[in-house]
Image (cartoon, rainbow, N blue to C red; front, side):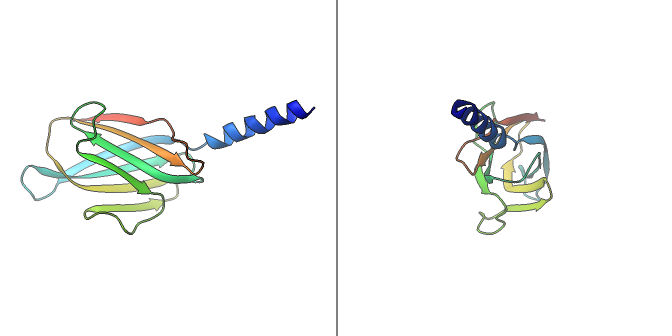
Length: 129
């Protein structure tokens, strides 16, 4: 009987740990007014907003790189961000701005969550032209 309760408890922890995920990401780039540079914004749709510590954003000029943006936003903390960066949230939708990026033909992005138990979710990857 003790083994059954232990297994059920582990199953509960595993299921509860991974209930947070990224459902979708919209990457928007706009003219910045500075030649050869754009502003970059991300709208991250979350399945749940509990037990999240950080949202890690990586943006690169090649697949798997993070040469343009490599930043972890503290969850629900809109102050203390680098210049040009911003954070806001409305329910399960998080809006992130990451300042100026060079204007290039193709962007490769990856976003993941760091949960309050220290584990990371899988990356949500995207490519944008």
